[in-house]
Length: 343
Ligand code: DAH
Image 1: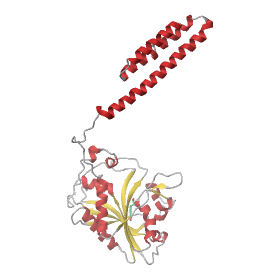
Image 2: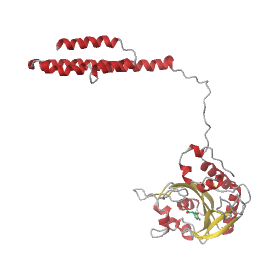
Image 3: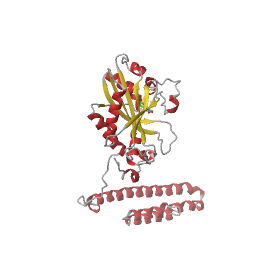
Image 4: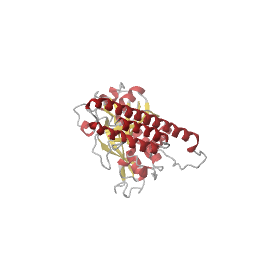
C-alpha cells in the first residue's frame, strides 16, 4: 500500500512538469482527483490493509491528497497569471484605429415630443417646473378636490407605498405644490411620469407621461385657456388648427372641458387617426376650482385660473401612427428606432 502511495506521488511530480495549458491542468486534475482518479482509487485499497495499519495508511493517503490539491491550486493560479500577462503583453492587442460599427442613438420619441411641447410653452412665457413621482395622498387626491369618499378615486387606482404615499396618478398632483410655490400670478407647465393600477392593453399603460399647465392671475378666463391651447396645438401640429370645447367633468376644475382639435391629418373629413369623427380629443381642461386655489393659499375672490392636462404618450401615438401604447415603455429598439413623427 505504502509503495503504491509513493508511486502515485512520484508519478504526480513527473506529470506536473508536463503541464503547460489549462487543458493539461484539467486532465491532470481528472487523472488524480476524478471519480476514477489515482487518489480516489487508493481509498478502496484500505480495506485490504491490516486493521492496525489502517489509520496510518488513511492519514498517508489524505496527506498526498492534500499535497496534490495544493499543487493543483497553485498551478491554476500561475496559469491564470500567465494568461493575463500574455494577454496584456502581446496576444490581445486592440487596434483602436479599426473602424467600429456603432449605431447612432436617439432620444426616445416621447422625450422628443416633451421637449418640443416645453419649447412651445417657453416661447409663450411659461415656466417649466417639476412635480414629484411619489406624492402624498393629500396632493394627489385631496388637494385637487378628490376627498377619500369621492368616486373619482376609483378610476385613478394607483400603487400605494407602505408609508401611505402614492405613485402619482396624474400631473395634477403637482398643482398644490406649484400653486403654493408661485402664490398668485403664474404660467407654469410641469411634465411628469404618472402611474395607475391598470389592466394593460393597446390603449392603457400603468406608467405614462403627462404635462400639466396652470395659468393664474387676477382675471383669467376661458378665453385665455382657449387662446393658449390653440396656440400650443397649432405649434405642435405645425399648422393653424381649429379647436372646440365640450363639457367635461373633473373635480378640480369648474367648469371642466374636453378640448378637441380638428384632425390635422384629414382636415375633419374623417380618417383612421381621428376614428372617422374628424376631431381628436386631446386636452382635458377647465377653470381651477376655487377650493383648489384656497387649499394652495390663493384667494379665489382675487385670483382665478385655468388648468389643462396633456398626455405625451397619446400625442406620440397620434403624431406617429403607433397604435400600441405598450411599445413606448418596451425598450424594443426594433419599434422605437425607426420611429418617425409624421408631423
Ligand atoms: N388630471 C386629469 C387626468 O389625468 C387630466 C386633467 C383634466 C388635468 C382637467 C387638468 C384639467 O389640469 O384641468 O385625467
